[in-house]
Amino acid sequence: MRLSNRNKTSVYSFINTLLLIFLAAGIGAYFLEEYRFNILGKKSFLLIVIPILTIFLFYLNGRQIFEYDSDGEALHFRNRNVIPFLQKPLNDEFPKYKLLKFEIINMFFMKRLYITISSKNNGSTLLKYEISYLTKKEITDLRFSLHKVIKINKEKRANI
View (cartoon, rainbow, N blue to C red):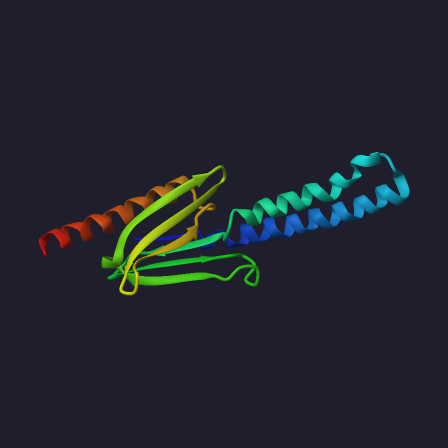
């Protein structure tokens, strides 16, 4: 199964650009307010604080683009940001038989996917992905696919 929200990259880029324009307009309005109009008084700092908070919340949700591929004998996960230099993109590929368990965590408006895989060195490794920008249907499909892989792994281990 393949799952990707890569087609929404232009939407996330537009939102990012809009937030930056909102911040620039807020800074301009703040200076005009402080030095020219003085209508808002001491509340003029909100012209800068509100855009900064919205940008912070947009990036707090994590990497916007998530791709998952379970076709073949390997699982492939990619997680990257719309702005490439902001965060390091995650790119993991491993055989399906190494998947031990997974967990999807919902925290307010943030969603995280935690994958535990078997490792030769220290028994297991925890991989973390940000899936906040996936729809409910995409998360349900991802959960179904990962459950299917785990079920097949358990059946193979029981037969051995």
